[in-house]
Amino acid sequence: MKLTKEQQAILDGAQGETLAKVMKTLVMFGEAFGAEKMVPVTSEYNHLVTSFGLKLLGPVYELMDKLLEAGAVSKQKFSVDPRPLDPNVPANFLQKLIFNKFMYSKQDFYEGQLNKLGLMEKDAFTCTCYMDEVGNVPKKGEVLSWAESSAVVYANSVLGARCNRNSGIMDIMGSVVGYVPYFGLLTDEGRKATWIIKVETKKKPEAQLLGSAIGMKVMEDVPYIVGLDKWIGTELNDAARTYLKDFGAATASNGAVGLYHVENLTPEAKECGKDLIVPDAKVYIIDDAELERVKNNYPVMWKNKDATPKLCFMGCPHMSLEQLKTWTERVEAGLKEAGNSKVVIPTVFTAAPKVLEEFNKTEYAARLEKTGVITSYICPLMYMNNPLCKSMPVITSSNKLRTYTTARYYTDNEILAQITKGGK
Amino acid sequence: MKEFKGRVVTPGRAVAEAVVSHEGFNTLASLQSPLQFGDKTAKCGDQNNPDLYGKPLAGKALCLPQTIGSTTGGLVLYCACAMERQPACMLFANHIDSLAAAGAILADVWLDNVSMPVVDCLGDEFLDYVKDGMKITIKEDGVVVVE
Image (tube, rainbow over all chains, first blue to last red; front, side, top):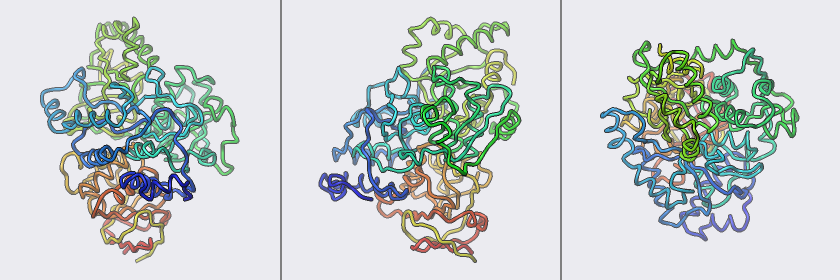
């Protein structure tokens, strides 16, 4: 890799041993992918994936301490993934004990580290930092050093920013030196689609299910999706952005997608159209039967597969303001139809603190509260990341949550029926 | 016995028993639970991976196409190395992905006395040939002997 004089000096230790190691890490990382140079990080803010003071991540906190002690701190402020704990979310005595004493005992310590490293503001904890209410919205063409798979795929695909699927820690390192290796999704070539996905469903495909099918098929490749604009339109309005948020998160967690193009909708597809597709691209046709096949193959990890659900999580990734409003109306209508006044399964809707703040200013907040749905800024994934949840039947329409925990996946309509009418 | 030539991502020698995933290895889903709850053998916790689910990974030669899933993957792998519960080596049929590369490189640069050699680009034939329990020997030039 060819380094500039400044980059080479950092590597040679001109700014201390720790920063030299940071640069060495980035250089080795780039060389593993054939990068020939480093390019400046140009976004205003960074986004980090590690938000949790999880005991097992002790080695990560030690590394952060090394950076802090050496003054290796970025000029970029950052947002970070959601907090793992929220007293609003139902938990029994044993769960609270495990969360506070064993799992997230390092939470306060770690949030102290994040503040020293440059957290945007005290509540900048969300996986959907790109929401207008949160304010970490990169512009088209900007180079990022972000991690968080769902945020990276959104920034690349919907906003047209440029970011590789960086791992946690690597996200900090690129920001600290202000450069990232130039390869993969940062390059024009790396943004070309190697798969054509033909959506041939007879009804609007469930975002989380379509994303899952595509992720499992293409793994880390770039798909160009044809036929989806028929269902979600050709404008990136609130509804389309919300759909793509959930769709993208499923492609990234069920596979390793970092960028997708939707014909006539996402910025690069609108600009370049089919020129984005490489000549020998593979083809994957998705119809309703294929989505059903994918859904039926999900393993059910509950101890008792016929158990009645005890908790429902919506919002992994965090819900948008538009989604909170739409779901308020859907829950109200579902309850009315079922003749119930409150949800029959404890239900938590999660969103960014800033999105919840805005939601609480609207008349929808009181309406949602009346249905019994709880709102929270928690990370459902981190909540469920413990052995007690194996015997706790949790339902969700998040394919990311399903992938990493024992939560059982249902479509949005199925979830609505369960929480408003009951049944298994 | 068969030899495969790959590319060295992080150097080192290793002799270990193979465990094979034909699907993408989801690092967070696989290692989160064993690292969190003191399983020194690091049994794979990924319910979606029928090849590996429930099998010990620590000290094994992990053979895989690539890793997938959450971008915490690299730091989880780094933590596994720091806690000495990492695979003896990782052998990728495909080009290594950015998350696995981050974990392996972070361990190589920032941890003393930890070795987890990584070789990639071994090809589909490698994954077709290697089976659970086979003996794997990695040489420093990226040659992998399977017997």
